Length: 103
Picture 1 (cartoon, one colour):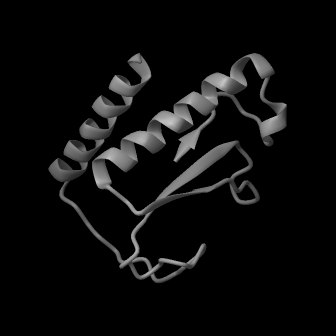
Picture 2 (cartoon, helix red, strand yellow):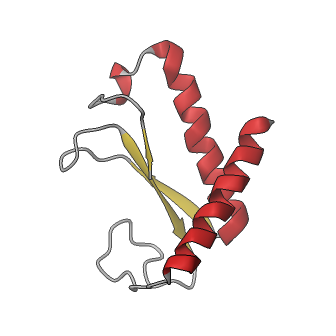
């Protein structure tokens, strides 16, 4: 998920001078997820009725996955990682995003 730094409920409320920077961050996170996890498709979702703050959900989808072809699903497998594994994945994403943002 990529949340906007300030509190806005709608994309059009973000000042135009900041909007492009935010979209570049969304793009960088998407690219990093794609490069690291090699999904067949990335899906993007923007909701706000539960959490009224601008944010994008970036969802990696795989053709052989249980949710392929379903935009919303309660069939997602639960995967638990160790604290060390979570930290490692977070660090890989952070490094890749930083490298993409440098360009």
